[in-house]
Image (cartoon, rainbow, N blue to C red; front, side, top):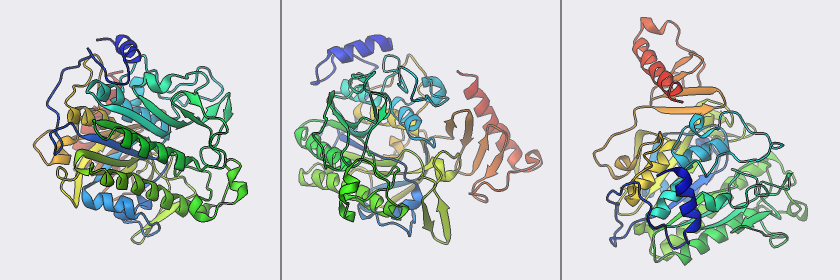
Length: 443
């Protein structure tokens, strides 16, 4: 079935579900009550591993995220692109940037401003709608300008949305105090005056879960926190000046932003507990890239500077936590590789729906890792940012300019391996280079 036909059918179909569309069904992984499991996906904005205590941070307090990790599985090797929007496209479509048209950043002055085309791509929301899920998204979209693309979110498969506009009528808008928000296609001007944007998105998330507690639901929650500019949260005595848009605070406001992000994660998890949905819900927590360069975190004796927009570990190696009571065993640490293309096939496998067969899907399901079942594990991860690329496994990392690093011995990439062919690294370099060449020849 072509993507154009798929899109038209999704637009015509009511929020009750998608009928008559099939990519081939598998067997869903059922929750404790024999129903398809709910899925909640947190995707925090601009937050590196060094800011989470469960990943060793000594600089920030994140008790709710830490509790999620303790109740399930924490991954050591998840890789995103080092910038937000391409990470989101990769996550939603299961495809690498060179396949979806994201190579160079698209400037704000160009029309139409859209970072991928729902007429050509299939998202994880499309697949989950097909499987009978109610689909919702709240927080940060930043994949289009809504003045040019008012139906973009629905065309991407979401029934309900509450999103920061990012840009409206070619002007930047506030994501935090006095936010500018699109809710189900309607610009909510002046409705949220003196409100704190993350609270509005949190209210939507809690309401969405409550409204759909008796059916399978998928909530994608790409938070606006903890992106710059630094600002005071409601728990840090915000003044009237902070309520007039995004007035810049100080860098020492960042710990409060991290703490408030953690608080909102805890609020939604508590709602799932209250509704007795934890055994019916897979909760996934990740971030779209590393922290802003102005922020750092101490891990052991090392201070790690934020790596957003950089192709190092601080920019691309992101946290990934999965919690599902009764299905994902508590207290696990997993060394399996995951890259951001893997979310779509993982959620499809969970819901028992196949992935599209009319295009390359680069991701592979990490459900076997989650459930500790036999199944193929990813052998390498690929990241692209503009024209920079790397391919890596848990130990070795090869950039497309030829630099090879042993990440176990050189995690900060200070000593590229020279004369690799004279050492054990020679075979590794050829293997990884063959993967890069194969990907670039598959465009």
